[in-house]
Amino acid sequence: MTTSAPPVKRPFLGLSVERRYRLIYKPVVFLAALAPLAWMVCGLFGWLGCSDGVDPVKFLELRCGKTALNFIMLTLMVTPVRELAKLPHLIRLRRMLGLFAFFYVLLHFTVYAVLDLDLNWRMVGADIVKRPYITVGFSALLLLIPLAVTSSNRMMRRLGRRWSRLHRLIYLIAALGVWHFYWEEKIDERTPLKYAAVLAVLLGYRVARNARVRRWLAGRMDALRRRTQRKRALACDTQRSP
Amino acid sequence: MTTRIPRIPPSQITPSEVYFGRRAFLASALAAGTTAALGRAHAAVVPARAGAPLAYSYDAAESVGALVHAPDQNETPNTWHQITNYNNYYEFGTSKTDPAEYAGRLQTRPWSITVAGEAERTGTFALEDFLKPYALEERIYRFRCVEAWSMVIPWVGIPLATMLKHFRPTSRAKYVAFESVYRPSQMRGQRVPILQWPYREGLRIDEAINPLAFMVVGLYGRVLPNQNGAPLRLIVPWKYGFKGIKAIVRIAFTETQPPTTWNQARPNYYGFYANVNPDVPTPSWSQRTEVRIGNPFFHQRQATLMFNGYGKEVAYLYRGMNLRKYF
Image (cartoon, rainbow over all chains, first blue to last red; front, side):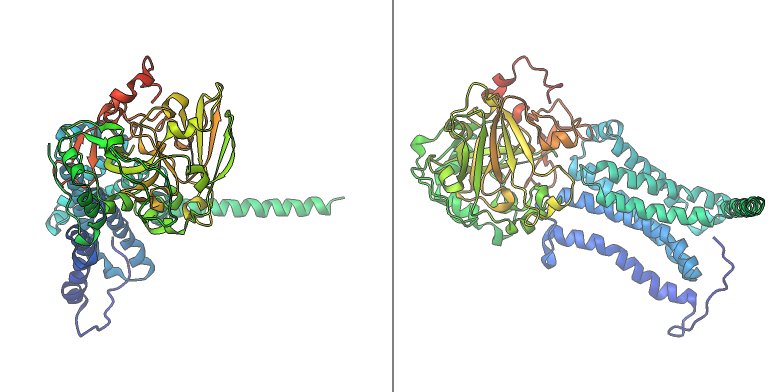
């Protein structure tokens, strides 16, 4: 993702952008990203007045899943925000957000397999094969693995252009994640639909921004304009003639 | 048999602890794995405040008999805190904690109940008059939710059969239909059309007069809290929890099978019968096992029993029926 905007050099605590991220922004985001986990752990032990409720396993399972989806959405928000708000260096946070998404997806699956199903692999296997919403969720988990593995600078360099093509898988993963959530819901689909709406906007932005799509759209608009002009001219002509 | 008391904060233990302290023999009955259904009131006086002690006198000699089977399973009753803070009651919201948070807004007094349809005695009755003729009993039942979790709950109430017979249903009464209260101003969930409000449920008449079917007004010897369905709810222990309609305002004897809410919402998921059956999965999840609320973190699942373990009492109702078709 290279944009034409030049690196912003506003002085902040006398630190360069590079050092600001390394010393302040990244540690802050890292700690903030651990907050959902800290909250769940506090609730588990009843610390700080938190509670995971009467069925803590189910609570952890759902909370981890939702947090994972939140991080996937945050990861997808980086590009639109840095382009629209003209903050190109925001890209430096994207990898961390993506890896946290993977972390919470793994936690979600671990709670499900170890705590909810008592590590009964036959049941886990039967679920993945027989329950479509679990098949969908599990596929998203599998697809995230290559992305996490290739997230290092070294892998980015090694894969070159193929890296960004591979990482476009996140669009599919996000869709599978929301689908999994939607399907899992017993009857009240309002929350999954909200996620679907956010995802539609985030993906829609990418479609609208795509050069080829823009060129095509511009062409269509042009043709439309020309056609209406022609029609209007024709209408004028017929009005004038008796 | 494993009897493990769930770990809960001391502030929340009191009611059940006090309760079991008072009735030491009950603990021994539980340890033996068979639990008697207990209690008989001689005047069913129902005080208005949720959580207040119920005025019913206890008499073990008149207990109905052993109703909780399966001594190999953990049958420690769940705590008051668990039973009253983990509820599916979509009239107050779809989260498990919504009912505990918002059910207080429902006014349960005054309350009236309409009895209609194929019966000799019909009409609208004030709750107090409606309950006056009956003695209250206590019954400890397993409660199995269709979402594959379960609890063990000491209810206080009246056998449904006793109550229904009082209205002298005619021979045309083949089903009993129940309807919940519809009060969107006090039940915030009813402002959202997730289900068709008011909630409706129904039973075949022979199911309804089975001795296990129970009309509940209390919990742990106290007035039923709103989140558990006050002032009057149904409990059918061999069926999934959603059959246990809450805050009942109408009971009708009908000739044809009445429409039921979850069945209307998703007919391929929730049947009219909704008998607990480990062999018939709900399309999105298995019914083979269940999570007993309050079990320790590991090994929290246990096998789900046919008819929730009440087969001896109810299997006759479904003899010759294809339970995969009539799920």
